Picture 1 (cartoon, helix red, strand yellow):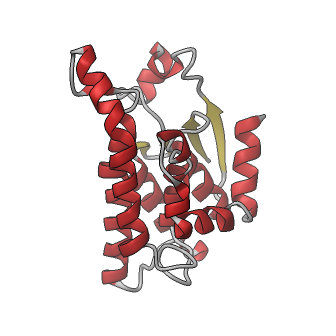
Picture 2 (cartoon, rainbow, N blue to C red; picture 1 turned 180 degrees about the vertical axis):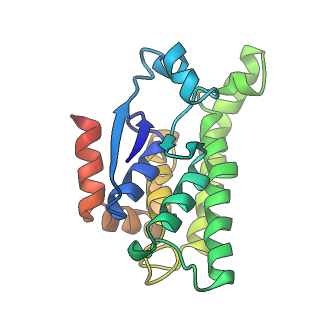
Length: 206
């Protein structure tokens, strides 16, 4: 059985949803960022990065959302969460998830974690002011060039979908005008109809 460490509202939601979609045997342990549990001695033994998600497997611990999502898809092929029979389509899935990780998530992080890139308070404020612009730019590109509909890859639901849904959930708080992203909004609504998503959201609120 796997063990997922997560915190509500974080990027770990994507892995949590994927585990549910795959009907994987797992348990979930919630960390409180408010109480700084991600930097506790016990958790740092699991993930020295002090971040979520972390997935404990019988072979070791996996971190980083794209890696965990790919592992889940490959471990449970019957769930058809990735197009393993099409090398190009699989590379597209990895490309999209890499963009969400390396660009969209990083743009969002500039709002409250500027200390990762700078030390001056004025720099933090400048980065924070830039977030609505950078997140809008990232998701405009996603809607125009990546989101095929009804799911990210078209008719087939994949590991791109819980990841996109998770990060899109931050847009309103980042000052993005959702009225300019109808495709993203429609995708989120479709996601929220899925039992796996409903179960994970309920667990986060419990």
